[in-house]
Image (cartoon, rainbow, N blue to C red; front, side):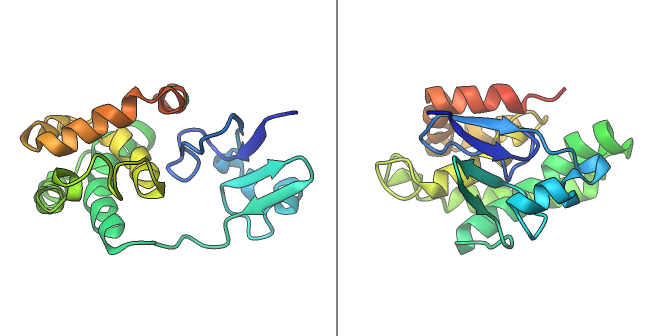
Length: 180
């Protein structure tokens, strides 16, 4: 049987997820509006990514929805750091806005202090869950910033990240997300 296909850019935080099954990432080029092309609109009539295909079955995202307050707090603290340190300089040629980074680092510290990881191996318990997988993409890119050492001050968070990165499926996923 052919593997499941996930349509979207491999570097996208919406595409980069461990799903517990073999799958193939099929690139969708946003720069040429491929996500709005007739071909992609057959997969996802809302023109969003990711879209999934398993044989004749298609699944797609309708809208981006935060499933947990904690996920929102984490992503809203970590994503500006990723954008300011990696995406803006490399992809847009915009210098880092240090004020935004500093404010976001302080927010992230508060979220990490409140992390549940002192009571369990993973975010929702002693098993990998959607919560862990949802945090993976932004954390992966965050670890490529000069602020990655922040995790050293939070041993439970650092151990969680190391456990997640040790998973074979996450290693495979991370290899496809490496900056070009």
